[in-house]
Image (cartoon, rainbow, N blue to C red; front, side, top):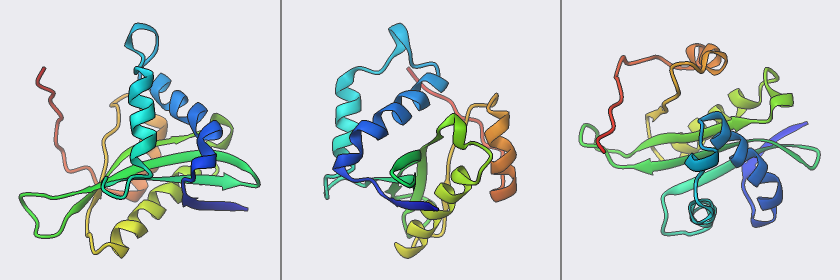
Length: 149
């Protein structure tokens, strides 16, 4: 039975391969790999009460099948904060089995419980498999992302 719950410190050995899979999917390997300091800082933020970053895991039995990292932040166009679903990843064997949907819905529930009315996320334009799910759950407002370097 699938359970969505907050990440716990003892999840690190199972969380790490999911985090690495997520980063591999987005091309963060080899020379572009994230430094270990980033991974350690990210992990630590989930347990720091002063950080707005949170993590949920999808667990079946004792196996972690997916992760969702999200944060609450202020907005200039709303009084209440908003929720950004920063990272979403499921193990390959768990894809198409409702794990991603369950994680998104759990993040949305956490946002609602915090009094937020908006959850949003980005994905790569080539991520067609995930976009098939996203198109069922959310609308696309049509924004294009830019990065200034």
